[in-house]
Amino acid sequence: MAATEQSSVPRKNSFNSTPWIDEVLRDLYASRDAYAEEHGNDLERIFADLMRREKASEVHPFREPE
Image (cartoon, rainbow, N blue to C red; front, side, top):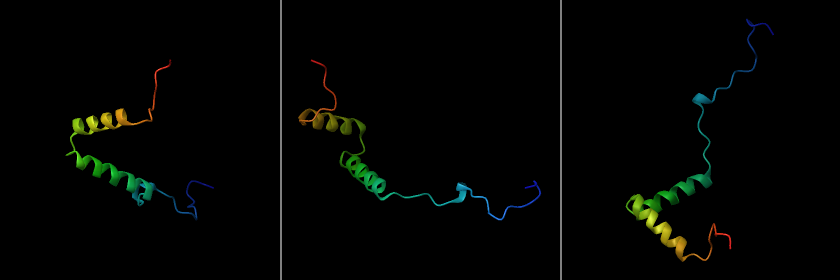
């Protein structure tokens, strides 16, 4: 096809398209925002709560080799 000919298929550009919305991500973000709101959006309080939960948990993501 020569450079001056126009294609019968329009070019697609994602710049002006509507973003894809995932229900799972929407729920995840809502849960995250609610959790942060429970702790006043204070990172130190959130971190302390996560550390407390991890310590009380029976499941440990990483254990030192014995």
